[in-house]
Structures are given as C-alpha cells and as structure tokens.
Length: 235
Image 1: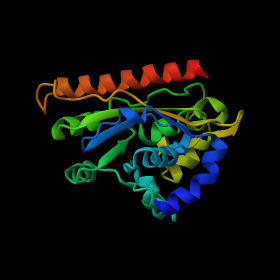
Image 2: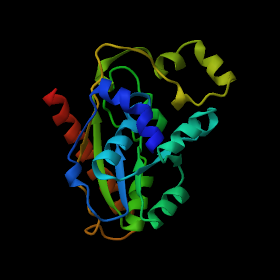
Image 3: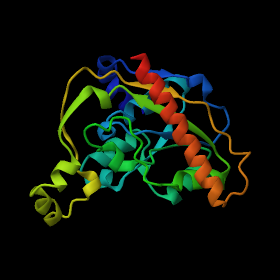
Image 4: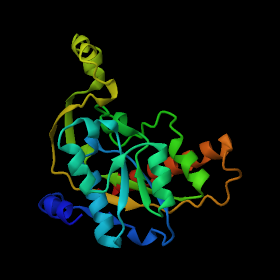
C-alpha cells in the first residue's frame, strides 16, 4: 500500500479527490462495501486509497478476470489489495474479518455508453446480496461521482456491435461487455466518494430467502441512486 499510495499521490492532487461520510463506516468487521462503477473503473484505486488514509481500512476489491489477462495489471492491482472475483474469495476474506469492495455492475457498467452516466447496470445480479445475507455482513453503499459526466463519448459498445466492426470483435473472441468506449475529457474530473448509511441485515428474514436477497439488493441500489442524485445536484 505504501508503494500504491506514492504512485497515485500526484493524480489525487490533480483530481481533487474527496471522501465524504467516512465517519459512517462501522467499527465492526467484516463489512461489504458496494459501489457504482464510473468510466473504466478508473476511480477505484482512488477510493481504496482515500478510505485507507481516512480510516486505516484496506478495502479488498474483487476484480474481473480481465485484470489477470493483462500483463502487469495483475501486479499493480495486487498492491491495492485487489483479488480475483469469486464467491470463494469473498467468503475467505469475510472469514478473515476483512472488508470487501464489490461493483455488481462489473465490466459492463464500467464500459457503459453515451448518455448513461451514473446508471446502475446491475442486470439482476444478486450475488453480493446473497453473500452478505449468508455471512450476516453489514453492507456499506459508497457512491462515486465526478468522472462519468466529465467526458464526451464518441464511440461506445452499442455503436461497435451495430457496425461491421462486430465481425472483428467476434473473430477475436472479445467479450462484448469489455468493449471500452472512445472518449475525451470535456472537463477536469473531480472525484468524489460518499459513504452512505450502512445497511444492517439483522431485520432480513432467512439467509437463503430469495425475497430477502432481492430486497437487500433493491435497498442498496436505492441508496446509491439517491446519493448520486444528491451529489450531482451539488455540483
């Protein structure tokens, strides 16, 4: 982490990174932090660094398999405590009393197209809620803003897949959800992270209840949508 923090310090200053609501983070362990992916997940290291500096807490991010397919990226991610995503990895971290950071939208949300800034593209994913209920782990939603609305996207996934370029993509066996948008900045990003009110799961009936899983997922999504709307109005 010392190496990771030194690497991103200049970028933190340039991007005016701010963490709000850190005092809401419970003292209990483990915790499950759930966030919204901004463009290309470029802000994730800054969130991990901000929480570490503010609370001395290392969030163990769960990364897409893509991280482990790109030479050098795996090693860099490991400095931030990021591990390959799987239910088994999450369970292991919880059993060690660590705090896990997940983005239910995954790569698809990180590469969302034009006109969809700050949309939660979770597509019915329930895994994080199921794990939280199974391990009786408090959920901490964390909203991120300041990047999605400060870029101009010229070409996105939908544009590529509806064009002749799709044949090239399919021939190379590239996952469609990993197609990055082509963009340029239209304003200097100012990264803001806000810790939402934690969601205790004591009042949810049944660890394996599908109703409980869907209800928890909806509560987390509502918390993020509400906080994102408030943050954007404050800009």
